[in-house]
Image (cartoon, rainbow, N blue to C red; front, side, top):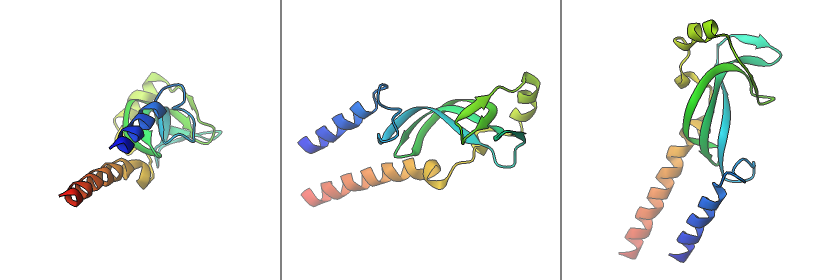
Length: 128
């Protein structure tokens, strides 16, 4: 039981804003850029995509919010603003659900939660 509390404390500390953006920490928060497959390209590595705020565990998004349609360059991790007319034209065609994400980023959070719940059930049955 002490081990569990120690792990929870470590996980909560790793979520603190001062160290959460480091790449080696299992939790990270902040900005995330997502390309949209099949969307227009703007040259110089920029294409239409979403810039969002997110919380991730081991590279798997748990929650994304405040997504804005922008020209994104995922290689350089940079964005460029689009004109309001352009955003209005593309916003109906490309929703945040159209973001290009790998399977782990998309479904990894569910697998992590399922593993934690499965371990809890296993421990409970083992004790009984």
